[in-house]
Length: 296
Image: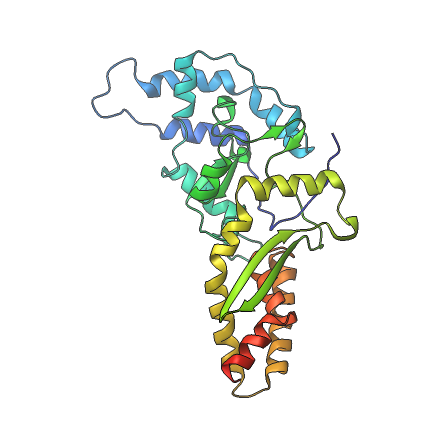
């Protein structure tokens, strides 16, 4: 399999010993209300020792971009799998702290936007390798990605099909500074009609990489979700331009807006959908036609 390093807004993976995180999670488990022996917290301690040897396997594959080489161990009974899956609980303290550490950026700011879609806020942790298929990694910190519940639900158990990734990995994949997401905006009947689409113009991206990107957008229904979010972005863009018209011409306001978008692209990624839409509003005829119709 050929690997390419791609770049969304890369998240910082857990930097401490992953085995220590497993121990923290296990220690956080308490006796359940009305629970009778054998208690879960007593069962999970020896079971956690059983999965411990697989953690360095994941860590090594993660560090070398070879997660696809890991095979499920399939050594657990149904009851053991159930116990392993119960280790994960997003609302519990270890996972809250993990999420906060991952979304922290080098400038000490926190970005709580889902990096799968860049639309919604983070409110869950997604399992890169599906926890139902790989219960031994249900709480491996580098197998958990802060995400929104909408993306988590759409991604579901999707992982790899015929050697091709179904979704981009926000830790390991780095998107190059190349635009592959585009917006087509038409102003007709006093309405903006927006269509987002993917295009590997001039075959800048290798076919395999572009295939992964297409899988990601299709599986998460991103093009349609971006379209549904476009009205709010256009309204905010219009308000910003109208505010600028008190001191400058429309042309200068659009040039200034374009410069801001390009700065945001350098910081938040060249294919962040909001920037793509605003860039088309700056460059294309649709917004100018709207402004002419509005008399400014």
